[in-house]
Length: 78
Image (cartoon, rainbow, N blue to C red):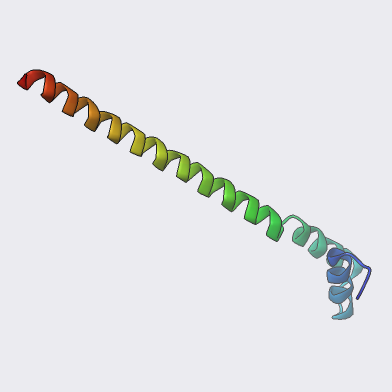
């Protein structure tokens, strides 16, 4: 297993197919700006957590309104 970082390995591969050192550096820098798998998973988890919070809040609001309507009907019909 190579001890080089993935970016250095990418740079080495780009150099091996004939790119100049500047082009290889530019490509490696561009690839380094993309989110990693862990970054993507964290963003995805945060998005799902936010959606779950919104759904739970909506359920609480609907249930609260239903209880309020039932209570108002019970008071009105007594």
